[in-house]
Length: 125
Image 1 (cartoon, rainbow, N blue to C red):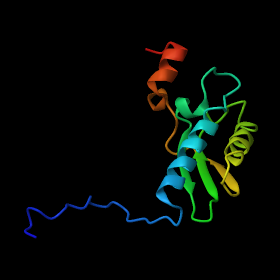
Image 2 (image 1 turned 90 degrees about the horizontal axis):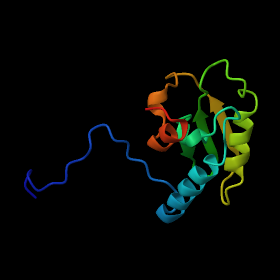
Image 3 (image 1 turned 180 degrees about the horizontal axis):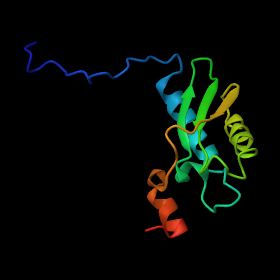
């Protein structure tokens, strides 16, 4: 193969192989997102996924799930209950193992993280 016809690797892209089959991993991912969309901040009529409060979801080979999430502010009144609500929602997905939820504040949340649907629902244009 000449240099021109070799497939180009994405620079700095991790080469991660999961022990979970691709189709099952895709189903788990979709089901976890669906579960996250059932969790609402009690003061905001938009789910936490569309609000952009979920920063990362990792599914390990043993099906443990680690979720990094944030809050709309460090003084959020729902700070005590939201992580538990996220843990319960993700734990309800068939095929996942134990779920750990970590609240992070770096980077800080701002409205730019909201989806277009969330902006429409909150009339933020």
